[in-house]
Structure formats: C-alpha cells, structure tokens
Image 1 (cartoon, rainbow, N blue to C red):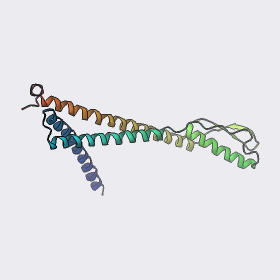
Image 2 (cartoon, one colour):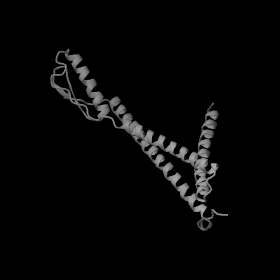
Image 3 (spheres, one colour):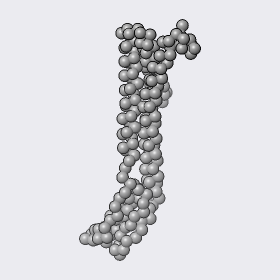
Image 4 (cartoon, one colour):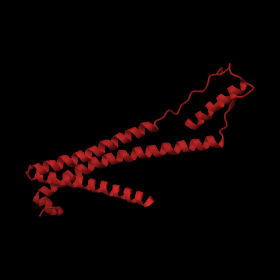
Length: 186
C-alpha cells in the first residue's frame, strides 16, 4: 500500500511540474509570437492560458498565505480573574476551576497566572509537565503555520515574477538581433 502512495505522490508531483513548465513556456512562446506582430489565435490562447494558470496559482497562494497568517494571529492576552471570582463556589470547586483557568492561560500565552487555593488565598500557578508539553506543541504548530504562510506568499510572488520573466524572454526572442545574442532566434 505504501508503494501505491509513493507512486501516487510522485505522479502528482510530476504532473504539477509539467503543468507549471508548460504554462511558462506557453507565456514565453505566445508573447514571442505577439511581439513579432503575429496575433494569431494560438499565440493569444497561449498567453491567456499561461497567465490564467500562473495568476490562478498565485492568487490561491496569496489566499492560503493570508489564511495561515490569520490562524497564527491568535490572542495572546487573557485577563486575570477578578479578586472575588467564584466566591459563591465551594472552596474545592473554586480552587479546581481557577487552576483550570490558570492552566489554559499558561498553555495559550505562556504567562503564569494565579489561582485560588482552598484557604481562599491567591497563589501563583505552577504548570505541570503536561501543561509545558501542551504549550510546546502549541508553539510548534504556530511556527509551522507561520512557515506555511511565508512559503505560500513566496510561491505567489514566484509565479508573478516567473510569468513576467517569461514575457521578457519572449520579447527578447522576438527580436532577431537580441534573440541571436541570447541564443533564442533561428
């Protein structure tokens, strides 16, 4: 079963690389033809297809980058409980619930809050090993989300710049003297 997954992933990757190269070649060749004053249907279709593909991928990458960025911008501030919070609760329940709130506060923000002990005194919360582990996992996942946001934003700019470079190379190839200098012209 693993072999099928590897073959599936590889074929999917190869397909996308071929599609990407084809889109850039279509922009290059279509713009080359258009700069040679050959406004045929095929040259216009090449340019429109290539730009549509590149801008579609770029737009999707910008969308994903913004989505991941909004996911990583969580609120890192949790207000401390008021002094009289839970005064109507039993001392054991009050201690238990304020410890839960302090634990959640630590996991989300890393700040050490306070809880009310059985005697009704406010104490500094000392996180357990599990709390520290959960906090570390949250930080790791936040870093991964930020990395995905950055990677998608870079991919979006890559597609915009690549398509513009393909147009510039098409322009160079369309001019015989410039094309010969760069090895494009026949």
